[in-house]
Length: 136
Image 1 (spheres, rainbow, N blue to C red):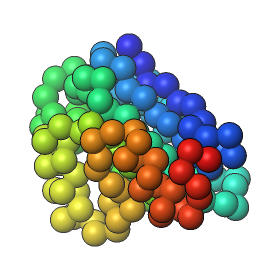
Image 2: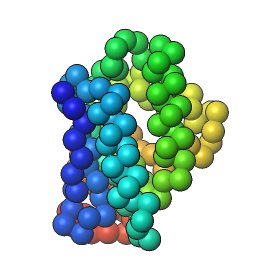
Image 3: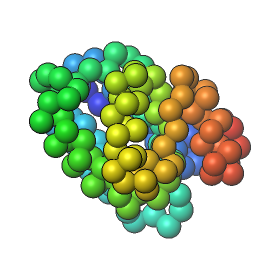
Image 4: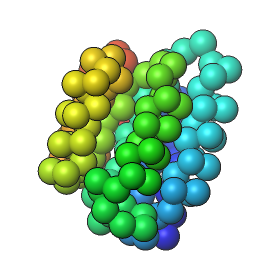
């Protein structure tokens, strides 16, 4: 019941963030803070794969609750200075809908975010976007 973070390649240019069913906001923000500390001191671009395919739900309630909206805003503010592309694996329709709503509010918030069905597809998109070999 957590959010785990790993390097997805040996060159440490792509992070893999995996959600387990039952994740918490505390676990998510712990991982986001870890990502920020990793990336803020690097000159090079770091991409990320966010794998939601293992049954992502929203902690403590509805996707459209006030708490969820406030946490989503907080996440967008944390990622505003992000340096690299993000590929989101397995997001359900509701997650995509909320993302589109945020994109309407801030066109730059999701400019380098890609929704995909598999981690292999995510790796290919990031490899192309970041000009790194697939499987590097």
